[in-house]
Image 1: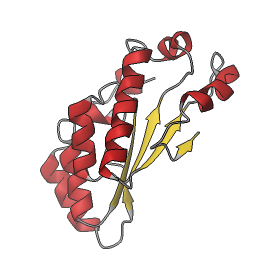
Image 2 (image 1 turned 180 degrees about the horizontal axis):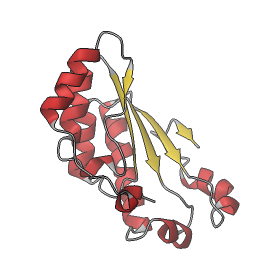
Image 3 (image 1 turned 180 degrees about the vertical axis):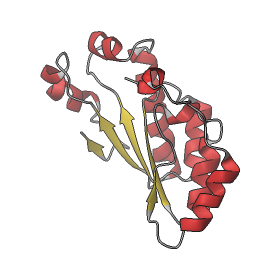
Length: 160
């Protein structure tokens, strides 16, 4: 699912100081920032600082993550940073389908990560808008009803 490995340009992470400068330069007219580029945003070493920078500048911030790295520590960091909007990409309602599309990930572990994150969100009363998203693909399109049932849990604002 992650296209980083097929691109021919350098996959470099933006320097946090450059990000701060960009945010400072645009804060008077930008309403929303997605502070990442290609692939999983949680691999960027400064993603939580970037979210915090946009928050402090009064700019709403969102991201899309596959949640494989969303352990308890990162869940706390994400909530502490003040993210406004998150898409949790989970492309299947069954272990077989999910793991076919998300090579190297484990259905149960990623689901556990998401459920723990949602529980923390609820406990903190966080206003973060959470979207569960399944990209419709050949092997998962028949699972849409099961997907809605799987993710009918507190803390999710939208199932897409």
